[in-house]
Image 1 (cartoon, rainbow, N blue to C red):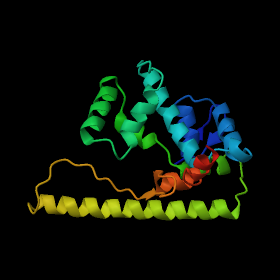
Image 2: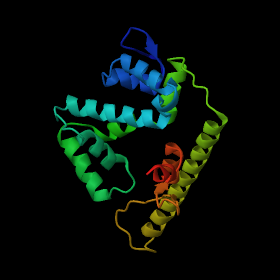
Image 3: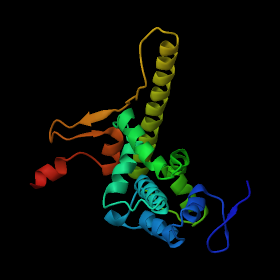
Length: 212
C-alpha cells in the first residue's frame, strides 16, 4: 500500500499518522505525543497511556462528526463500554446501537483504535523520537507484554473450545462474554489491581498508605 499524504503535504506510513489525518486531529498532535513520551520524570506518559488518550480523541472526533455533541465524561464512558472486559454484552450492544443510529460505523471505529505498539511505531518511524529506558522499565515492559500475550492466548483457547462445545450441543450457552484477568491483592495495603494495572502504575498503594 502506498503511503498517504499527510496534512503538511508529506507522506505517512503508519496507522497513527493516517488516523491523525483521517480524524482531523491536527499534525501538532503528533508533536504533543512525542513531547509526552520523551518528557522527564513524572511528566512522561507511557505508550499505553498515549494509546488510550489517542483512542479517546478518535472517538470524540467521530462523535463530533456525527453531530452527537458529547457531554463532559461521555466520551470516556462510551470508550470504556466499548473496550473493557467487565462490560456485559447487552450494554455493549446498546452503546454500539446508539453510535450506529447516529451514523457512526462502529466496526470501522473499533478497527481504528490503536495499540501502544502503533503509537511507538509512529513516534519512532515518523517523528524520529527515542526514549532511553532504564533496565527496570525494560524488564517491566517485557513482563507486561508476556502476561498480556498469555492472557490473549488463554482467552482465544477458551472461546474456541466453548464455541465448539456449544455448537455440538454438549453444553447450553447463549451469547456470552469471556473474562480473563489475573489480579494481585496486596495483603499489606489491601489494594487490588490486575497485573497490567499494577505494572503500569509502578506498584500497589503501600507507599500512599505509609504517607497517611
